[in-house]
Length: 295
Ligand code: GDP
Image (tube, rainbow, N blue to C red; front, side):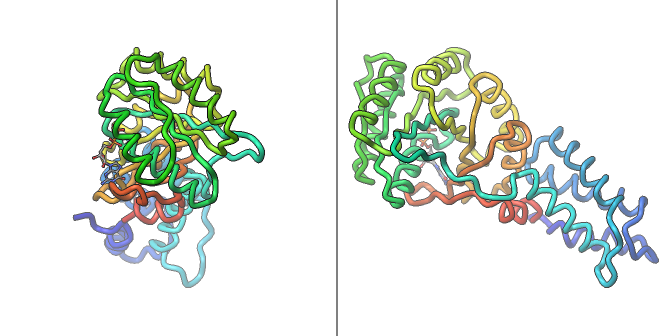
């Protein structure tokens, strides 16, 4: 399907016979290949442009290293820049000793938000942190049932007030309950829509200002490709996010959304979803993602 970027760069360099080091002319050829690879990996166009400009500057300033082929040296520059943009290290979920950590989940319907809520709770439970899940999606009664079912599956309690209650009030009472019971982390699942919708954003903003979460996590479907960038911009501008979970990374997506989300919001990807099961959640590691994006 995709040619690995390293193979492509090697052949780009081979065409330029006699050029055995990074130079202005072969940089342009190589940058074109990187640009193509990033677009194929579904990185947002503007994000690609900014990224390429940065790599160009670094490649031009690079010292020639004896014994290292220029394509390999160039690949390393690209890889390192990807890792740097995506934040170098894994950033764990916020946690404050002796206090209930409040996590707000945000995102569109179908992205895997409710599943990610349960996955996160299971992950925390394995770290011996107690959890409470809060079901505020009153628009789809099936969503409340889905959370209850998932909660039973992972043995984590779910706070809900049925589908007639006000979502902001459910969130407020759910967080209050978690604090009263000395729960380590309360995770508030919210309603999503198929598309960005101002009522949904207003409700989310309302919930956020009421519960003042320590973390607001945007759930992004890695398969949505270019759209991930617009989604991130809107949620970050209107709600403000502290991190993201990239779901459906078990599919054939190359994960370019990770670069877009980070570049646009500045917020770290904290986890990736790698399957439908509740166990299918992994911490996000920038270097692994850089290798996947490059192919
Ligand atoms: P929500 O509407 O955002 O709450 O989405 P759901 O949590 O209901 O998930 C929507 C669909 O995506 C369900 O069929 C999930 O099983 C599936 N799903 C969620 N996360 C993942 C993932 O990481 N990988 C795969 N393959 N499917 C996922």
